[in-house]
Image (cartoon, rainbow, N blue to C red):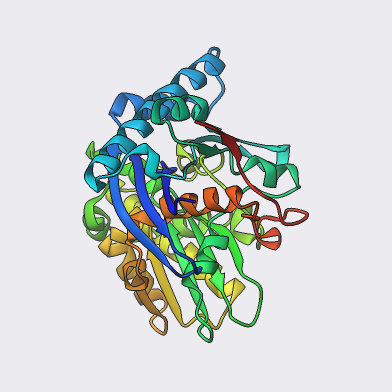
Length: 365
């Protein structure tokens, strides 16, 4: 059986589609990234995806049309990936296609990722595994985060307490304690609110290196108001998304007297401090933190984390062998492999599911 899998990921930040070509060897730690491609989303497509997060008259048809478009973007990323790697579809065992989350309401019994895996299988001539989250939700879980099982297999240390922190639109944390079971949960906003505020007031998709936030002043009263939200008081299992943390959530906390740059500074502190507090709550003995996701490239955000927790070694996942922005896509290639080998992809006490479950649905080429 071919060992090459493709992982596709487009996250909460809505920046674009990552595709990775992964060679899984004979042992769990034997993971080699063979290639990577990235297709940025156009502004109109981003806008249309954002609109799907709130109900409107024609949302059902739009979600299907946008799902088809997402699959074409995924295929474009796959074509580029295979061409650069000198491979063909015949070399690939399967594609792990996460799709784009537009609604996440596990308390109501559903989570929705749009995308058309049947169309992607037709276009690519490769088996596609998709719909990874719904089985966990059906089993009473949050359906998220799903990456802790992958983090456990790839990034665990036999003696050191580690945390893997993915700072995407939402930040999620995996606690790898060698003496206890792995924990995983969302800690709150990562880049989501930062990017929204920067786009609104600077007309830039993100605050490069946190430079704009660095020039602002922390609004302590605003930060305290943010942390009164009940989500920050919850412990694992917990997950969140744009359904909760969004422009409306932010606006209800703001006063006209606040400087827009000071708000950006305070939002960055919210991301950094919510991560630090969540780690302390779940494991006070963490010795190392490894960062991945787009927020890991925000110099000021990383600097704040290091200042908030100076006793902890903080590095990027590059130091563990997987580039910062490729971890999540690699995880979904791994989840596809788990499904094909009839192995579970969730961690029940992390998501809250009733037990181990094989995640994903197969769309044969």
